[in-house]
Length: 222
Image (cartoon, rainbow, N blue to C red; front, side, top):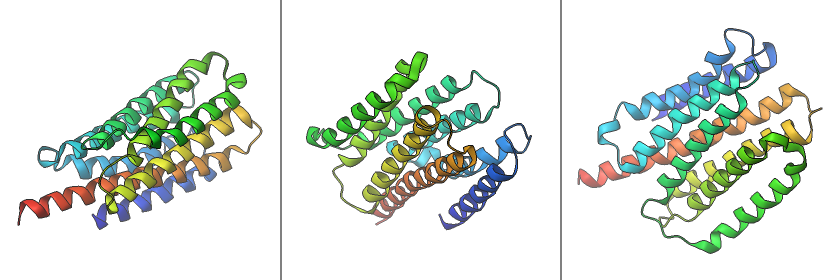
């Protein structure tokens, strides 16, 4: 697992440098953005037939995340909603992955419900025609956070997955803040904050998945 994480970090740094040195119109921008996620996808899909159900779901969630990254990196207008839709599917898939072998634990939904509803009410006056898709997306990320927190197994993968879910919510919150609440925010600073937290979130969810897969294989081999 160490090799792909090193590659992921190196190519993530490449894209962070691209954010402050080139624009979305540059032919290098899109590849630099998606290569880190491609590394994680390839790492999981190499063993796809032998992955547990959760591992397969996370792999598919990464693919939809890749679609979302690609849409949002296109400099032309009209690609925000397809990008949002791709990430919404990814969040729902992650939610399902976290739900496997877990109880409902409704009390743990309360902080995510409070955050999601409060954040949506703050955003609502600024959303216009995007109110419905953004509302659905906020619901999806809060659902994902709740399901990550509600898992039964309090192990290292649990903490990695929960941390990944929370950082993902932070990343999406930065997107919403910079797009709707503070349009004057420096775009490079916003993009750096978004991508640093986004890459970290995906890496944590990936690491949780790989750790669980290794644990399962270890049990099977004993």
